[in-house]
Image (spheres, each protein chain N blue to C red):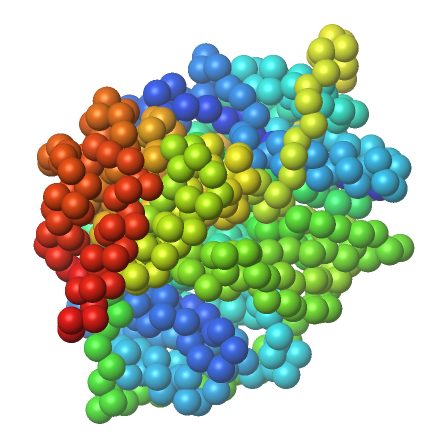
Length: 345
Length: 264
């Protein structure tokens, strides 16, 4: 017997693959467009299902942008009260629309706001949700969505299904799927829905926070190149060199737990089991010895370069390129050389 | 202020992880469990509010009996009392079924709560679902990533940080409410041995006999999601090329790597 709190559903009434399209001010965040690309792929595997999008308090221009990136239908939730984001009210409004259109699959970008909304929406719809999926497939036999996510400290890859409930929900972090090409010839339907919510949360103020020195660098999870420093830097000054190198490479800076504890970098930059798990194309670890907890956070980096005076440090034995040496000599020369090369171009 | 802190007795290290081959869920029975690291931020946050406004902090956890020492440590930190929802039928629950038990326990045993505080996520499952799902079950507003709060009558004013947008936001939320605490934002106080001594007396264990929840709605059976497969994650093998020598030579080689990786 299924749980009596689960309202009976007819699975065949749920059709299409829908995406929550998160706004940042007047534009759609990339993660929603990336998910539209994945939604098209899943829709095709489901035999040509429809791809939909939901925007809260968005414009027709945003809806068209979503159509250019793969949506067949976009619902704009039109309620002046929802112009400004608040978690409960947004989650309720989105759930109301999803309940009405009954998609088979509903995807959400696992941004900070997306993570905040996703589980509340799933609960309101009496369905399951899988967080931070890194792959999504269709089970050809059952048509179920296979939600694949790393779990238990990244040691395991779990495949999760929601066989009895619809929609099937998953969140996906930015940058996991490529953004589909923009095709201005694509057409689709734009629907305006008025949704009422009970307001219990009010936004009072917003301020841009400036983390000293690293404020204008992207977060570690989304950067292609991460240059990180550890206790071996010896001082906060070492980070200035790393910031300069990261900027030259179009990347960002990260830190080990020891460097964060020393106060050389903010906690938001920490990489490892108690910090961030990252999957950059290139990871440069400077003066990081490589405790197991740190290594757990970089398992999925494509290439690891470690710079350390100790050739036997654990990071050196877990790197693609173990550079033995003093960063104080190497990094300034490296910066100089990159600048020279860039000037030649 | 009556503050409930949701805490998980988590598997602290990946080396301690055991998977049930039948259900693909995490085995927690018989495994040494400790308080999820980020829940200690939540507990510290709740204790600070209590210190400022008075009242009581109650830790709530759903776990097998091996979760008791984790709650004892929280009492050692200063939590007034704890409730452990523990029953074999709760085993194998996904976040939907876990949040259901937590919410029902709150409704039954702490119906006059003002605030529920959760950690940002857990170290062993990292879903960040429980806060929002508990809020949904309780039908109350919620805000994540909070690092500061102030109480004005029945309103909670919270300051939170959204890391990916680099913004601080201040919200006014009607209580009762659920908040999750930005990980790393608090410095958890020490566990005092003297407080921990009689901790067991302050822990109430409730089973499904008392909660009386439908068995089909809890544990593995009550979970909308199911684990269809579990495989050890595989990662790119490392090349392990050692580069050493005179700094200029070393830099030349690093430049080659950067070009090869397409970042130059």
